[in-house]
Image (cartoon, rainbow, N blue to C red; front, side):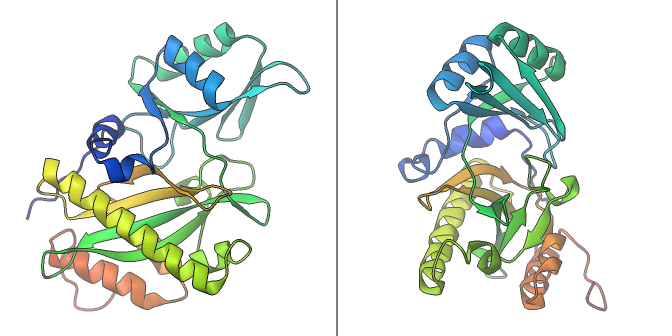
Length: 257
């Protein structure tokens, strides 16, 4: 069975923007250019510079306007932190960094923190054996202390959402919030499926701000199911894997992986 992978963040963003329901959860996102970068930094103070076709958080850069200790722009890529006194110097650096590839600029969201480290949420949505979309797993991703991305491949730590949200919600509030994330993620899957009928799974990366508003950071059409092995409840991973076998991503094995 064909599993459709959609690499372009820009293409997926434009599909989701057609939905009035999804728009309220989407950070402003535009193709990179001098005027776009300047206006978005002016409006939001912080933006993310992302390759349109990147994976594992590679190339993702955070840019912030600064007033202290000096007026200018703070730049961070992985553990590298630079300061540019002028917009032109920043812009020249980014043009060199992109090497002719297409990049987007996304409104920066100040993530909630756990133990002083930023985190976001990954929701796994899959076609179940009845061919209906189902949110099969929710997991938190705690960023490496010295990095801006939360990806496991970049040093992030997978962790249960219950643990990460314990400082920010009660258990009943969290139950309602998880249902909200499931509804949001299933809606994303249905919208993308209308444009790409062969997709069978998505991984939705969601930022949560201080007001507990979810923001769709990114949608992956070939998400890593093995991150769910890190949860204390192994039944989540077994379900995720079982569904992936059912729609043909993995071959059936005689024993559990």
